[in-house]
Length: 565
Image (cartoon, rainbow, N blue to C red; front, side, top):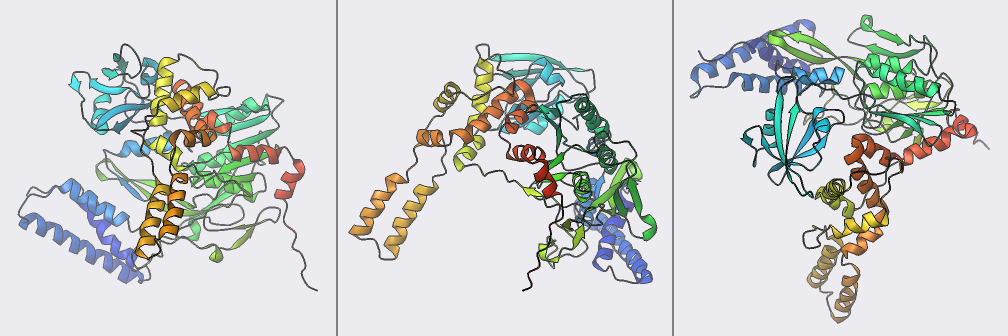
């Protein structure tokens, strides 16, 4: 027989067990019988297909599909990693890539591959590769029309080995450049940026919760401790999808008294409950503290923010968080596989579970609905403020990013801003420090000239609406001399003028343009700094933390007014 049975035990358990979750209320005996019955059924199907199917099946693909189909009935966080994909899980817990490469993001554009952005401190950045470099050869392989995935495989190899990368660089005289790059392993830091901003605010950007996160955050806090000007701290958890639970507990120990309970996890039975308390003496037990959150803040990020909210230790600013209250652990599997499986739910100090989706109760079509606010329960913070479970964390102060215009969207989507940033960087050796750099009148006028009106793709919604109005008026019998004249007068007022629109939206466009240019010189931190200069959430945090009365008002329970006559 040609069928490999190496993955068969796992696959049979996976597919058969999907029947278990469809009948959660079965008595244990019936439950076990259902498992055995379905295991036998699936095993018989595999054997029958292998013996009778007209062609040879592909066992690895078949069983991986079966495993993924089963796991999709549980929750999105329970995942199987075979020996080839374990590196992904390693990066999630350590931040380290399990392979050696050059350290650059590659993007596909017009069937060609380009350097999207070299990562600071990696071989590609040290060698001099730049955003916008068109990759034309890797060693002796012509990469014309190769996919970015195929090129990525060519760029990876043994640590310490060399690879020659030939690129075509726009906007320079000698455009064909070859770089000899020594591959190495590298990692993404959990704290890519921290600094004292605006004179007295200690700002920390935390992007993931990995093994070193507690140490990285503490290093930043220790530097703030030595700076007498720092009188407030902002912890930015926006877009932070979480990671290690232990890292969250470690970080919380910097802000609350030693021995404070910050978390409980509960599995299938009461004996599985674990209580997590802080174990260190806090560096900043009293300093005014704000945590920035958004819809991308999840898991360990929500543990950190939620515990600080429940303990009335910090004010949460931004938009509602994601709502992931589930805990995963890894289990070893045969043939060097791993199963990441949900083993518990976590509860923050008020006792609430902030999980937004209940995967054990699905709709008839298999979908999972978000818990409506009307069905959530009220809990109390340490000082008696009302907070709710389910649906993530609701910030104490809501601050939304303003939506950008369709013009700005088109400028980014079609690479006009990206290309101009490359042009600017390749014709200007230096710029001022990221905090000082501004998009001047000269830069903006040059940017406008770089846009070819004949090639610019406008979403001409207003013009289309005028056209539709004319057509509808004719269909409905309202198109006469009077309405025609009115529509004719309206049409030029609704026709786009590219350069006029660029002037009208200059402030908004300049924010994105400035961030893109700064990233060419200062990598991701340059882009972040430019964003922080006009960040409404950071601005609101500094405003509140600087006003002790306002901060106290937010962290104090609201008094209920007696409405009886």
